[in-house]
Image 1 (cartoon, rainbow, N blue to C red):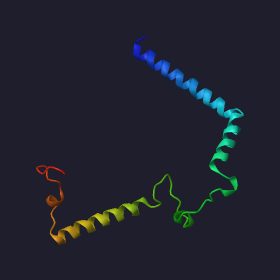
Image 2 (cartoon, rainbow, N blue to C red):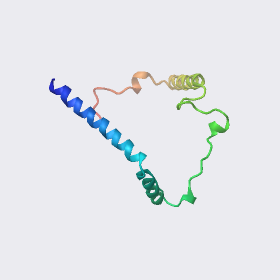
Image 3 (cartoon, rainbow, N blue to C red):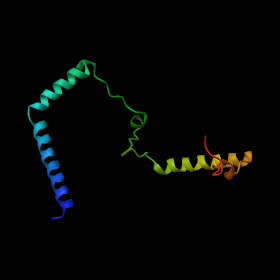
Image 4 (cartoon, helix red, strand yellow):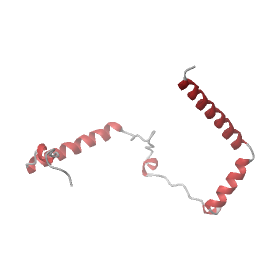
Length: 108
């Protein structure tokens, strides 16, 4: 067996054994002990934080996996903002080459 296979086999076995030990530890009575210590450290249990509702959830538009409820609308808004910025630059007479960095000028 090549040395690299031997090393990866040993690393894999450590991962499996470590995972099994961690699962066994948290399935034991030690879990309750750790929870008690955590609650004691974090403060009084009566002063818990209360969950608030976001504006999106109140409107019934819950985001899915962090995506906006209407991605097409969001993209259209972004395109509209970029077009407005380009038109504003054209009205001011600023060309694209003026806003790009000059490779001949050294930075500060």
